[in-house]
Image (tube, rainbow, N blue to C red; front, side, top):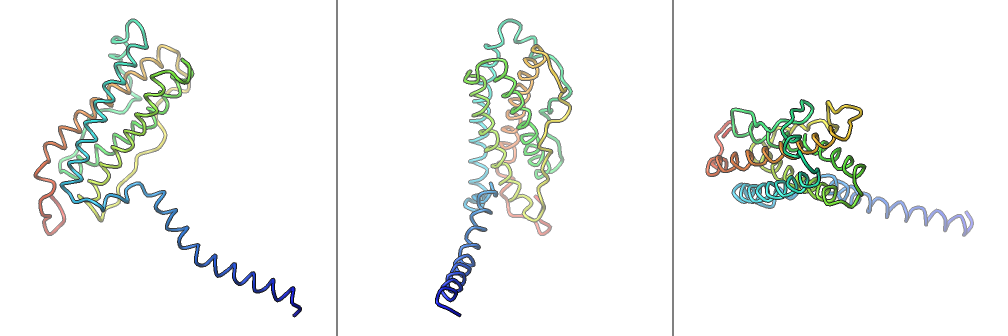
Length: 223
């Protein structure tokens, strides 16, 4: 084996050794990036509940403000179009008998609203300049609702640590393939109205379980 070939072999071996060292680090980084609830372990049950309630209140307040901005941008008859009924928009109801079931319902509902909010944001960009206050507000609100959902996810991990949390479908269901301008205006207002109603109920739900959720678990893991 001549010097050139020997050097190439040594270089290849060193590269493979470095790769074996770096690969586990890359895997850990990738896991951290795709796992939005890693910080759930950094706080106890009471802290999680307190911070989740505070964030839900903030999100509710910002949703109310965005809804008023949305109505003001729609001109006359804004209240009328917001009172319309649409079956394709998620409901604001919270269901379930146990604490775990009701918190899961809150989480599921929040995740269901996200794709609808994205659809409304895209519609607003088409109807108005992309930098209009409603589209910008929706962009920020999508992030806010996502953060709130992740906080609720933390509560679920405490309530049922050994049970996988089901994820709702990523795409909105039931939205017509084409909507006229009036339908788009009504759709956006109804999405925001029901979202605010859901957040209001989520606040009441979290207040009602305060002092109950963080009790010591029973032997079967229920609350």
